[in-house]
Image (cartoon, rainbow, N blue to C red; front, top):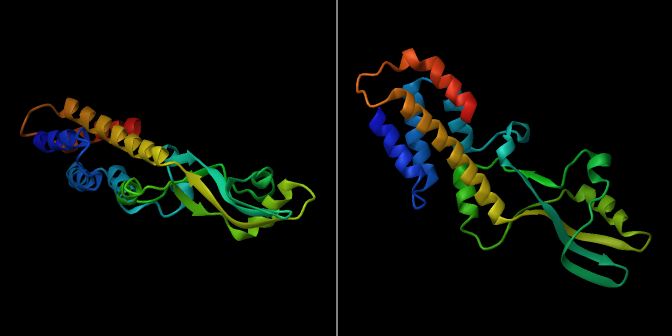
Amino acid sequence: MISKINVIIDELTDSKVNLVSVFLKVQALAHQLKNAKLKEWIYNESNGYKSSTDVPAYRIIPSIVKGNIIHGNAKYTDIQLSIHGIKDNYKIDLNEIRLGNSIGALENMLSKEDDFSIQVPTGLYNAISKNYGPHYTTIISARQVVTLNSVDGVISSIKSKLLQFVLDIADEIGEGHNIDILKKKNLIDALFEKNL
């Protein structure tokens, strides 16, 4: 078992190794450890979180809202939009994005040249336009934008948390070959709670 853990440690510290392939190895480890919480975490990270309320704090990143508007007789493209009052009045926080995507999708985002964005619901366009005073303002399009550096930060956080977890397991298990994992179940559960 320790040799499998050491392979995972080596791959987590190698920037050239795809995190999706590491997660497959961790999934097998979770099965051997018989740890339901680890299995669920691996499943959610590998497949994406089903609900935005389930997204862990390390996957919530700041965003800005950019868009195209017509203000009076002028058209402005790709400008940062004022979203004052949206969170209070509509209970939608446009200052953050909850990245519930799978780890593979996050890694794919980094291969793009543009920042990651998602469309702002069109139902909020009128409310956003009110932030531009009494002048005629029309929101043509709006999107929440996060930098690729922020996405990379989420991936780094996932790697770091997972690395610390498997390092702690390696320390506790040691180098023995005939280790009874079930005797260490409570310890592994505690390590999971501490790190992930």
